[in-house]
Each structure stands twice: as C-alpha cells, then as structure tokens.
Image 1 (cartoon, rainbow, N blue to C red):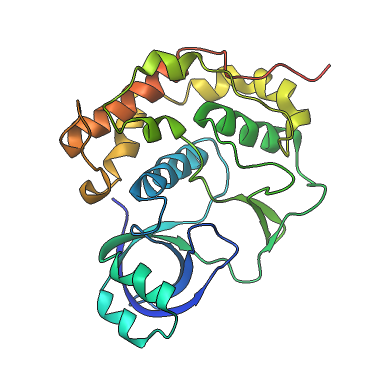
Image 2 (image 1 turned 45 degrees about the vertical axis):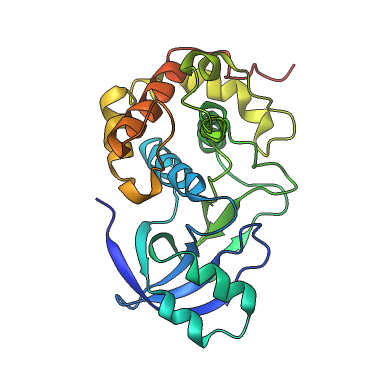
Length: 254
C-alpha cells in the first residue's frame, strides 16, 4: 500500500498548476508536491494519478514515488493567502503526495531519449487517453540525466462522465486517441512494435492490484457503484476492456 505521511508544513503554492498544487514537508523529513483532494478538479484526478503512475512503473518508466499526505486543516491558520487557506480547509485527511525531485527541470524542447522509452510513454498515454503531453505542456522532467513522466491527472477521462452512473466500458475501449501534437508522436511506429510485449505485462489481476492502492475516501459513490470496492471494479472493467482493443493505438507516421 502507498505509505502515509503527515504534513508538517505548507511551503509554497505551485501556481503553474491549474488546481493549485503546493510544495509541503512531511513528518518523514521528505518534501512533496501535494495535489489536494479539495481542489476544483476533485478526487478523480488523484485516482488517475495513482493508477497511471502504477501503469508507468509497470511499463519501465520513471515516475516519482507517491505517498498519501495526511493533512490537518489547522495548518491553514498559518497561511496568509485566502485561496490557500480555503484549499487546506477543504482537503482534510488523505491527499496525494508526489516526491519532489530537487534540481529537476521541465522539458521544453527536443527530448533526447531512446525510441523505446518515448514509445512506452506514448503507449501509456494512448492506453489511458491522456490528453496532456503535448509540446505546449510535456509533463516531463529531466533529473540526473534521466527522463521522468509526471502529472497523469488528465488521463482516464471516462470517470468524469459517471455523474449519472457508470457508463459503458466498451465505449471507452473503442475510442480512438489522437496522437497529433504528442511530444513523442514520431514514436508511434515503435509503440506498435512494442505493443505485444507491453500488453503481456498487464491483465485484470494487475489492474486490481493498482486500484487497491486508491484510498476509499477518494472513491466517491456514483449510481451503479455505490461502494469503494464497486467503483474499483468499474475502473478495472474499463481498463480490461481498453486492453482488449487496439483502436486507440495510433498508426505510425507516414
């Protein structure tokens, strides 16, 4: 299970993030980027972060370690910024902590990486329907010379359509994914070549293990999945259905 850390200090907001993540310190002396459960995008973003981070690791990609950050809203008393105060007060309990990589820098130009690594990133994004890894916003870091993938919250968009109830996994399974503008668009051919190898490492049991890492409190009930376990099962069904198709995997550039 993901380790739990208690937040001891709120350090600073990261205002380039749409949901106002912040840098915090924990009682393990670690420093983390905190994504708050009370942010406008809600807990579904945190679910996507956990699941897709686990998938990335399974595919052999580097992504920062995750922890659960237990937040006492009492910390809000010491913040002058009212927006930060509101966010801390709305996020009592478990939030998502992403290991802070000191000295890492964002990719804003040509990525010098092996074709296989780029292809695995592209495969991951296509499978999870991630729409947020373009040159405008690559969500890639370089740390100690290695490439790290971050910010997976824009993946698994299907769960945003569950307000009236769990939808049909087959619809997500069959939905194409647009590779245009993706940072590794030129790796589409190699992603197809690696598809059989990558797919062999994933199955229902793997997805069940990944969803088990998601805290119950983030799994908000919807019609047709009123309990955390029922909602976990719905996510697993969607991922299994997607794995059984290939309409989402882009063709090689011509």
